[in-house]
Image 1 (tube, rainbow, N blue to C red):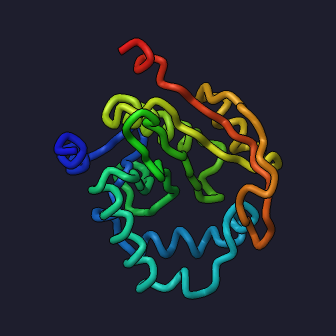
Image 2 (cartoon, one colour):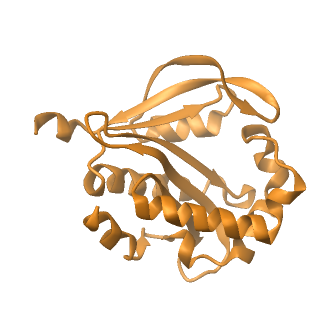
Length: 192
């Protein structure tokens, strides 16, 4: 765990992005991101009341995310273009389990204005590297509604394989929605 804590103090960058820890992000930038994309994200996320978008709630969320990052049970990151302050997305590894399972769930969201620029591909590639090299995870699972074609294309482009379908898997936009299970395995761990 010490290696993870040390890693969390590092600045995570890609060719065009900074992937910022919750502790390093401005809560007002997070609020602007969620507010500006509220309608765009609504079909793919749980129902959220107005309180979700309040600064007090978002501060608490960022603190909780930092604690989970430090505990090694999640990795929450916010995306900004290099040299800019605007939050354009987020990516997370959640429910990280170690031991014999060594697995997690992948989640992400991008600003409507930033789709089709390859930013999420760039960010998720970096997070996959972190999951496999730093956390030594064996399995990353992404659960995606079949109608979310952009998300399906993203994970397929990154090498995820569809393993199945679960009906009524998550409550999204007030309805229990079925999801396709996509998985990426860290083959290198199988030979250790």
